Image 1 (cartoon, helix red, strand yellow):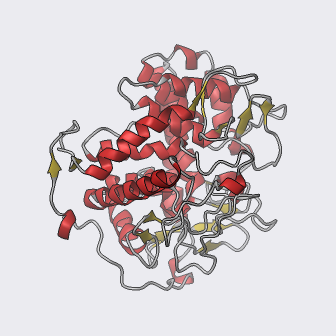
Image 2 (cartoon, rainbow, N blue to C red):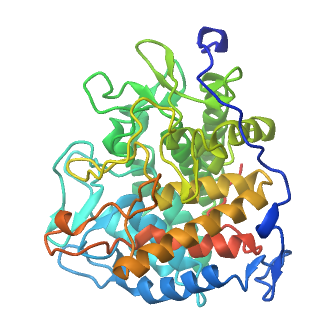
Length: 445
């Protein structure tokens, strides 16, 4: 069943600023080439005082995101920082990816992350999203591992140039990476659903929802992009381990998912990917972070990606702010910048550094390097303002003012303001990729 664009009127859209212009204007038009950063580009951010200062500060803060083995957690692990002491699923994955790109490289943290994940399998075969020194946090049924295990295992093995440790655990990795095929796969669409928004990690994303009407009902752009990459990673892993039949199977599953996403979730009239509710068979036409994840995963044809980036991402009426890019369009009726963290942290407007990393890679994937550079500069200013305020960082920021939000001192048992470092470290990777450093996470069919 194909969702027809003629069934869905266009959302309210004001005139959008141009994107992918290839040249910056005004004071930012000059290239800063003091220090080439490798690859085929001289890094235009080299010598930029704000970018260089933020790199110094990230170097100082990085150590707070690494913990030694502790109790149930048998291997060194990555944490968001501050008052956190648990290994969280996608936080740990992205922090470990950042560490793998340092000089000298530290890909062992990807291996450790995988080992700690494999040790957190629950009695029913599901996997906890959060592992504490006292054991896996079972809690809410939505706190389950997001689809990153195969990506972490494949990248760790490739960068370590050692596949022996995943060969020993291959069947277990495959079982966990494909477990949603029997629980969250909607056969008539060939696509996956989240349990709810909280399971997605974008805790209160209105394009998924948390009410009973949303439970296993929303085919979401982000989960299908993540699982697409899981299949690509499994295919690479199987080929490397001499399992050609498995490699072909997983490559075919990735291709089928790619086709299904582009058939069912793309709205040509609105020029966007939308999530889809399986009961109504209607698109959920909310311009949110999750719509753009297929562009990060290199699933969008170039003409579609460029149109979507121009119309929604690099547009102040939707996602663009002086402080970075929003998590939800300012045109959305639920758009807000309320500082909530219990029970959900707020993805209904605030600027999230991790979401901005996805946006940045999407821009780079689609030859929007000038906008990617501009985004890095905006984020650098945002970080430095926060560091001047509390000496550290936060997990999100008010999209209108740039002021730090969660975690506040009131939200911390220790009364600490900020302290959320973790995947915010990916800003350094963004600065390096502008200069030509390869994207270590790139996976293409």
